[in-house]
Length: 636
Image 1: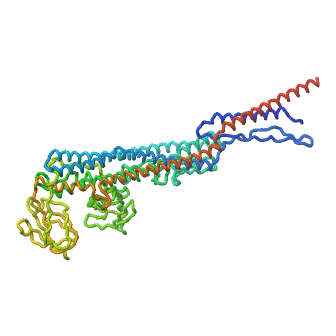
Image 2: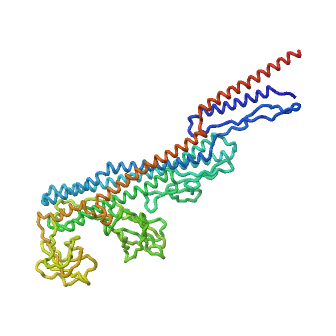
């Protein structure tokens, strides 16, 4: 037996050719997204013994592997999820910020114009042209709020559409990953191209939600979304779906299905684009919508209430300018009933005090053990409510009517008292209806103490009320509190004295509050109408700077401006998060590329090295052939 030079040269040529092939493939895929560079592992063939020595018999390529670092890939997926979430949040918030900056600016402008028009009415209360202009300003104000609500509704629909599109793509990826797993389980050859495709799909999936990858002994990978939903288990793929919102149908939920089983998914645990879209819809858009509704309610209630304190140009007590705040069209969307409720009770919400509304949403629940409980979704505060007849009264500015049947243990309802901004409408058509004139209040000179009264409203349909006359209330503020009422002739109205509780009297068409203390004080309301009287219009115009909202902490305009500032602040924060998340992702990407990416300089050096190796091995073959020919010649 002798050393086989020709065979050694052949193995060298084959090994060099394999190395050249791997290097060439790396170079060709240098710009291929998701490609992991490959390396060929070269080993020696078993040696043979000649005499007292062992001689090599050549070489072979024992393995071709893709350069892959699971930890670096996991870091990249995490970075991708965070960056996608940050970019999506910033994109959506920027759109909303643009809406509030461009379209939204007309809301406070229209409100200021309406106040200015009321001020003009106060200057010339009998001018029908000015009154007509004031009604036009009111209509523009209502139209601007409705348009703003329409924009927010459009954002909700757009966000829901994006969620649905992403869900569809996740299902496509889920099926592809299941097929790849099946292929890997069958072949067991760890095809680098298939593995690259698998990793590329998993990386894309990490844009949409947080991804956890679980390697299996079979070579497949199971995929979990958000740490709780198994999307792919071996070759079995789960399907993601969108279901009707509960309790509000226009706020769809996301679920996962396998076979005949469906599981609702908590979107806050998903992360990525899906988590960001749900967060934007539920934590930004919906609060903005409820706060816009709060402004609409504030405008309608404030001016309608002021109308009831004055006289119009016909000498009648003023009627509503805007649609009543508890009109069914304004009350639409205030209550949502959960589909899991087993009772038949139907809820409706009545606004009692607009100034006490906060723009928050609530959950009303009923259990046999705890009764009715109202939870503020913003603060987490829980209030126990007592059912009086068919009504539940809260301290948050609204009451809840229970009708339609019995309520069952465990029933829940979503309460959104300020929903329905799109229902704001000007119902007054006659400019003469603006109640610019107002009654004159006179305190008797004999009054003692610091008692004062403030008018809330008038009702001309109540007996004892007469336009053009006067009505005097004589108060005894000692305990028990009582009052008597007298007409212009000094004749007592009805048979007093009458008792009242708290600080409010509502009698003979007059509703007013009492503050301070004193005894035997009397106050006279002069209900005489004069065309040039502008008392009530002046009071209306002053309301632009009065803190009427959020329990006396904000004006009408500030409700909208605070929402606008909050959205601007959220947008700026999202921009900062994008910068941070992008930096982290780039760092992770650089690490992956440094290990798995193709370095053209390195590959060029390898190409030259393996080319020389190939040429050298081929030279051995030539040398072996020459030696063989010489040997044959020598024995001829």
